[in-house]
Length: 140
Ligand code: FES
Image (tube, rainbow, N blue to C red):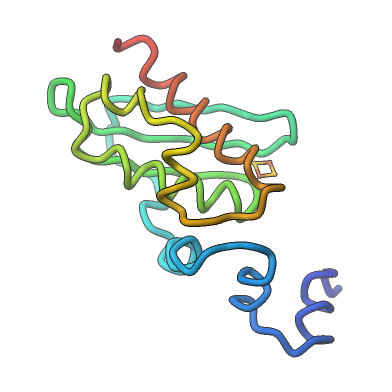
């Protein structure tokens, strides 16, 4: 059975990328989505944080540490493209930062890094940040 989004794409002859662009995703956000940057699980992470938002979507963050510095960050998720973009951006932003520095990253920092996502997806950024906060909380 066809999903509504596929019907929209076929009806307008838009590519998936054009659909994302028209929805408000920046070129940079679309590139992160295409690359699935930092998506996947991690062998023996030092921190695993899982959080679910009110919309039902869920994010899992995996962090590898060297003392207090984040050496690697990956994510898995059940949810939307906005969450995927936010998680990809956040995991990229925190690599090389101390837990203290990473915990100071805020909503506007992630939005600036992404260079644009639909306003209806701002909540996804909060889910990503709340997951990070949950993970780093006990280490700070
Ligand atoms: Fe729920 Fe994106 S995280 S709509």
